[in-house]
Length: 212
Image 1 (tube, one colour):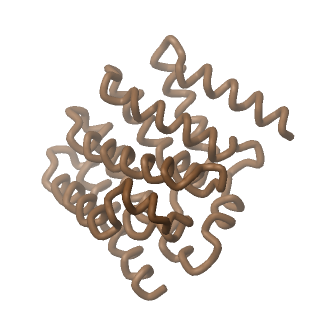
Image 2 (tube, rainbow, N blue to C red):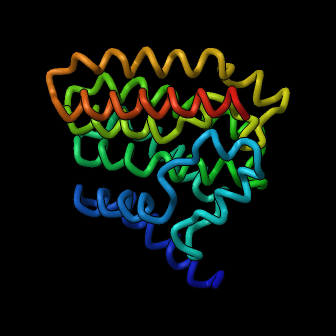
């Protein structure tokens, strides 16, 4: 119900901005659990917005416009976040919140383009983080967001405003691939594994996009 969703959003806001590391982490984990982790390029030949709505993990999941606000607030806070647990959890919630925001008709093309650009910048920072858990989470997020690296039209973003405000798909996908490839020689086995999985996802979805 709308009231239940409103209460859930209020709870999430309290946790996300909580006074302790555990509360901040719990709030981000709650959002991660509410949304699907990834939407592949195979959805490009159908109504991807409708697919995303159907794949929500819960009917109580907050609307995309709210997710847009929250995702951007969390991304803004990343550079100054001292806790690696919170930084890693932020990347964990990023794919679901970002895709939910981009799939919502209430989120305009300018805002959508800004989210994509900010997300790419966050991934770039995440793979360079000094903590292995954060690098792992950032690589996983990159692999879960292959759709927006490859073709924003799959989520209804083929507009002049979106094109002018964010890097083109031809620039985004190679940039992400370069970032992920750099992690294949990481000192952490978990990071290398996450990067390899993300690269495989990008390659598979690239093939599906070409065939769609």
